[in-house]
Amino acid sequence: MIAIVGGTGPEGSGLALRWARAGESVIIGSRDAERAKAMAAKIAESVGHLGSIEGADNVTAVKMCNTVVLTVPFAGQAELLKQLKPSFRPGAVLIDATVPLATAVGGRPTHVLGVWQGSAAEQAAEVVGKNVSVAGAFHSLSSTVLHSDQAVDCDVIVCSDDDHARQVASELATKIPGVRAIDGGKLENARIVEAMTALLITLNIRHKVHGAGWRVTGLGI
Image (cartoon, rainbow, N blue to C red; front, side):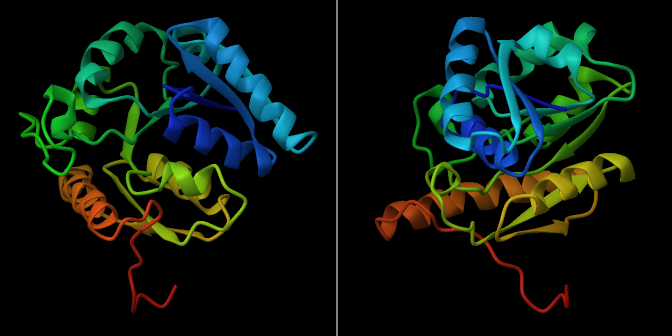
């Protein structure tokens, strides 16, 4: 079962839709439980009997799942994780998709903010502590494409210091048609991936598209 914290937003709901289509059990988390339930009902209507999806407040969603995906704006990431820390199950996996974009403080979305820990994913790991394994992943997937019926022409780069967290994130990535999971090495490499995501936003703006993504070539996988 997968909890998506921030699951009512474009990215979170897009991932929920794709994983429900793949037959996964998904809980959409939100500060507002009723809003989460409404989004879950909307997605359930779209996917039919393919998967199981429900909505709950963030705390309940985290308590119910061993896998938690975080898809919230960077401005609220640390404070939200501090609130949720007591709710994580021991040994849970947190997959952080946060990108520290300047929009969090009113700047341009093509600029990455400096993070004391090095990256949003490393900040997440510091906040939740050693009982939760953290991976950085799903930064570059277009929410527009996720909400469509087409395959997602994009690789997901997974960074983690924990092999289990890396495996969980990679398996979830490959459940989305068209997506490959690429082992990006240590969690500290998430700072590079997050910066690449800002560049990807620049490319989408410059070329007036919404679905540009990354492909890594020559790996033989």
